[in-house]
Length: 406
Image (cartoon, rainbow, N blue to C red; front, side, top):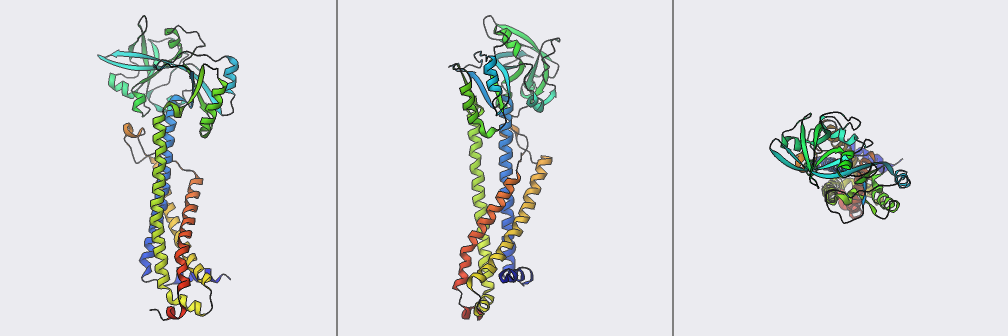
């Protein structure tokens, strides 16, 4: 029979607490709030980073293959992979798809408004799933269709409001080159990426049009967007693709393409670490206080047990079992609160954000079960280790003095 465990159960469930009752409740509440705060902070951070990263990956791909030169203009120098080079990139074990694109700056003049934009041309094989997700009106490009009043184009909600345009409207875009060229476009859809930097600049159209404007052959492109399966291997895959492409081309990852965004996201990890340390510290202080008060309240019992020959380790285990119950109950309540709020926000998107500031319109959350297990186990281990030191106070209690303690 495990006597310390038996005695701990009697103290925990049948013992009549007086002074320590309130302290125990505060301790359980502190542990519950700590685990709930950590779960929510990790979920919000992971969800926020996932959504922002998905926006950048969706618009630019994970890796870009561009010409290796000093061209800093918005218009990429033309390149072309031969069939062998294309297959070597496409068949990389971490590559999901390879899409061709090109960019060309233009000027929209409509409704007495003038706006400089960057036309991103895509071909018939381009994966438009991301564009479909961010569409707010209309449809994606149908690049097989040739008839109509003008070239099909997607514009952002920002530009549509700025230029007073809607789906089905047409306008003229001017391309600054020698000689200056202009083309008529019909708005097929309106998108909203949530990133004002992208929405102010990009319109999506046909790659063939850019080829015609620049007098390029049917194989020439401005670059290739490569999408990968395992984003954690981004840099490794980028380096490997850089070795596969010709010397006049280079592979650049999305982290290098928009470094400011990813540096900002990396800094957010520090916030979660700070939150974890602070709330754990508060919970540990409350647990230590509760244990010390419980020991003080049970001083007479400790003296009797010692007088009957019960060793210090056994007495200490009684109170450690009692503390384990308090931690376990706190974790249970905290998980209920934290996961309840997590699933509520995940399904309802109740808590909103300013999209222009945070790139998304709601508080995004994302958690894995491994995160929840790791958080609970870490807090449990930290709590028990922290309580071990104050439990050594039991060895200093004299049986004679403890029995007479009132």
